[in-house]
Length: 202
Image (cartoon, rainbow, N blue to C red; front, top):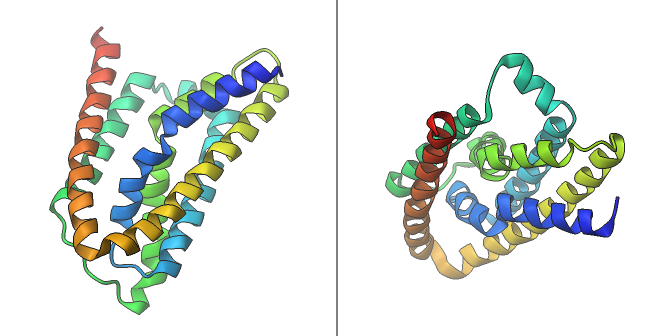
């Protein structure tokens, strides 16, 4: 486990997860929530993402092979889901969340769309599977698991900063940011679908 391997894996996963790119999904998901619930969403989504990525690190390749799922199909499916999230960001209004619904909504949005596919999407899942596929066995997996924890720690910091940003921008500012980021996310999702189709029909 050389230092260069650690650095290369960290940079790769950081670029693929793109904590700054996760921020608009998070901001759209927490619209209407108070600061405490927003922070809960951030912490829970990072914990869920960590579990998902480590699970795929350990058994991902065997699972996809067993199910007969190729990465192109995985990428296309992820692109479609991201596109649906983008449509919600662009067209849905944001309403305050009633107290009795907060616990349920916090759990729901932490899982979808923030954790999956926002953080643990097809690209990051594939990246951890490839990074853990070396010949060193559990040493490779330990290195990648450490890198996952580091990148997700930075992602959590970005999202918590986003909570402060939301407070500074106010309701109107967040609506504007959500719409603009929704358009960008729609373009990224379309690119993911196109990449999957290119891998399929190449």
